[in-house]
Image (cartoon, rainbow, N blue to C red):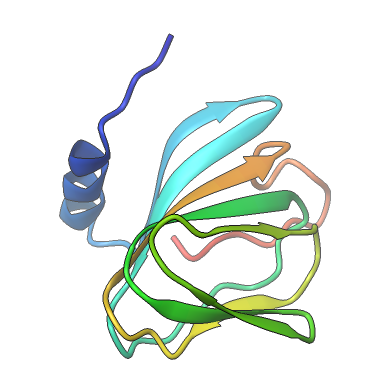
Length: 115
């Protein structure tokens, strides 16, 4: 078992100075915390793995392909592998749990989350 507390992950991510902190990696999946500041850009590129975002904190919009949706705490977004996607119009600091399947970067030609 591996148990984490969200406040501890947020603090560890802040100490890292990077927007993304991976906190779990097994062969079938990986998980991380991704934070974006109010008004800031989302510099990530499409990934070669399927991913799920869970919004912990903040309000923004996400574009996935040609679809757009507002997100807020509790929103869950599935993004298929290789699909262009980006958070924008970030109205409040955004904190997201990110789940990749399989583990991020394990498929050939994988693009990475901004690290």
